[in-house]
Image (cartoon, rainbow over all chains, first blue to last red; front, side):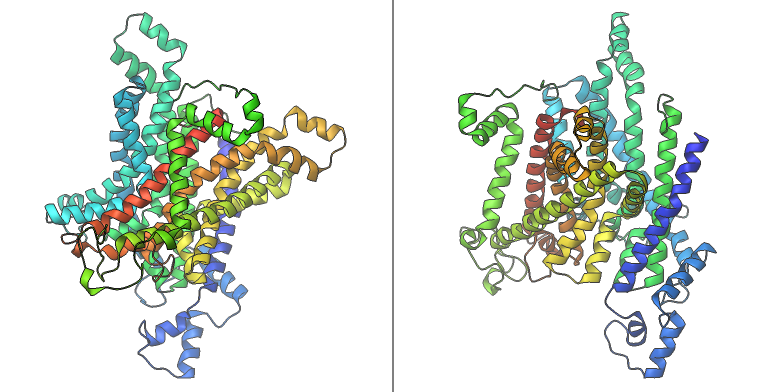
Length: 320
Length: 298
């Protein structure tokens, strides 16, 4: 297992290098000259001279050839200096990520936990009562979770709660540790919107995994011993059916780390996703590159940890 | 529906005469829900193709008389914030959702499947390289990847399709590769190699046709994803240009402030997106059960 983990960690290097190529390439082809944006602003109201333009370009390192720019950037990243914003000098990638990663992580954890709490009983019950009305209703709910776009669920929640509960997406974000109650009030709605989508998948996996296990011999043995159905279902079946469910939840978590973008925009949650969108739209090249690189690295690590946990929970799994 | 044994389709005279029709009838009998999904898709595609004829009004014409007009016999789904006919916009919007969805999925899956099969067949360095590139792309959040590519290329229908191809291809490389790896070890591939077939022939005559089932399944499953990502991009304002009616764009125009006056603006386009994705998923699930029961996930 150690060998396997090391091998996987080693494979991160080429993957991250390719990620860096792709993101650097894409960012440098984006139309829109950041040097110009710095000088004249969004609306193009400022004026500047050629000297000023050259100077800004030089300061941002945009006057050098692309290869040079790339090497510069990677060199800094390797020293863990992720750079700062082109536009706001006090904004560095490190401080921004430190401020926003916990917010996104909290959102992702809440979403996964909520979906877990709802989906697992739903999946277990619909497996136990296969092909009954309950099964069909739960199927309808889970399929709606997949079919309804998350952002639509999000805006419906915002609109309805604005209409009926006088809720508005907060203008100021409340910190979890300073104002836990306010923070939870702000985060519960976006977390619910994300959970609705995740829940669908978790419930389906729980159901099919349970169906498989319920057909096993040891379940028949347990029943014929005269065990109460509850014990059979929860202690014998669910325990064995749990692995795929955990994998799916972990996978969803890693997906949400970078993928809660739209929900963060709709609910004005100051997380990594919103940071990314804002920086892409203002052509903050170094910023976007570094954030994506860090996020991608994080996703890879979470995936690896998931795979390792899988083997730890289920010794039958062999790593190839 | 989980326990349907794989009933072999019997070859009757009728089937030989009308094989497609017969297959469709068989499919509908075994998987009524899937058939409903398929029929719904056909219905949506007809609407998209015939948008010019079907839509009752001009989808882009502003009309001061119908600003936030509630649904009426004149305007079945009411008017939006500048008085455009919501129903007509919905009908024209289906062109973007379905057109972009189908085109990007067709391109992305074909590219992905071919790359995956070749990668599995060749193995070695090429396989390792392709897999790392796939890893790299899968580490990007889909929306961010699409968003960045569209902002690079500029917003147009074609560029959204291109961006979606980048989003959809890596996943299908993975799936096709794992399928092809299994097929590669089959005896008939060995037999083909024994009689001297070259790599090109083995890939094209043996691997590709045997991956067809997974191709069809991937197509339907990915289509739902493509439609959702496209509408998300349009919702964020980086999808199709704002003057083209699209469902995602309609949702972003709905606006929280108007929800009291005109709730249908925020509901109708979302229902349309969900209905299409519903239909595709039902069809996809049923096709998967029929074509390849081993792939069933839940």
